[in-house]
Length: 576
Image (cartoon, rainbow, N blue to C red; front, side, top):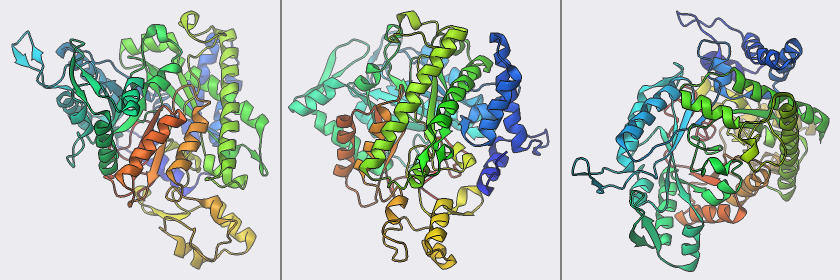
């Protein structure tokens, strides 16, 4: 297998390699990849496939760091747990029975290594009548505290704490208390929060008209508010805490492949997979940095990897056991997978394209269109071999497909460390820095070192000077034509982040998890502009992280120990 760098080896040893009863590591990285490849390839026998050839192909793709699945697959494949999916959405209806059933199921999902999303929009608002007891309801936020406390106590698979996405529709009477839920320093550390907005909200805002808040129990309008005041509150809290983000429900449901099964109302913890109640999704990401030929993209190799990855993820559905029967039944009906990419900024550097440029947007558009089209082709081929997903007849898909969705852009915070590439579609954090979360390792970008040596401006003193800087743009020793290639997350303006996100979203079935980084000096209005621009560009959701906003949310003090289940560690990649 390809040589792993020190960071990758450390991450694997701390988080992924199997241990004995005494806690001693009893597995090498090669054996981990072999365990995963062997387990998933056994599925081929059910469909008359070549088990040995498939196992070799899976193993070679992972050991070459060309493709990696989500963390639960790496951790659990071939073990007694055997739960391989990362993303789940659970229903919460307006009854104590439903709420506490969801709480029990959440515990089971977290214990198995999954992350959960919920819409709390069906719950009656605080102060509403509870007829059975002649009491009053405590509202969605109070019940969220119960889920947050339960999550705190459950380490997923014995290795990490769970993570949740809490969603509330903008029309809910308790929306303001939801928006301000993280104002307290330690509140909801195991939740990401998103306000779900629809066309009615934005139309009211654009027309400067009142917006109706509706009691979900009765369907009656209980209040009319200024939508801009609510929007300003969302922007203010996002500026202060990083939450809430915003979901655009109309854009999400325009791409719902199975509208006959219901409306998409919630996502997984990081927002990249909108799911129906009891749906799950298995994720994987292609390392674009491993798909170049000189200074060009190797399209033939990329096509081969896409087709292999779709087969891998479909086999993972077959091989997985799910924590509750309802999830297993629903997963079998839609068979959603989420193939994405990582190493995008590394690819741009290899192509000599600045991240913040129109050319980078064009590369994003071209690459993801190719990945999407080939993933659909691969899913159609699997449908011919194995049959389409059972709900296909009533779906929006014109041709038989094995999977209701095939593409997603996940954050890849941890698997990109294993692959030794830049995270997801994000810009690099820095050229040289200290990686505290993996033992204080000193990290220097290999591509920068290689280019510096090639161009003759490399020196140890230069690297020392760059360490822990947030930008290289003001360093005189670095040639002006090199600096734009290494724009960091702090260099890229909000519009640059959003245009990259929108280019990928255009060719993604599910959604794109993307963090828009803003400097500490950014204003609340800057945050508001991000949300407005995101809406105008047609993305499905957006999160803003301002430098200096509260860093401990979801991830805890040690992001590798307590990260969000779906690699949603945007803080982890920016706090080193």
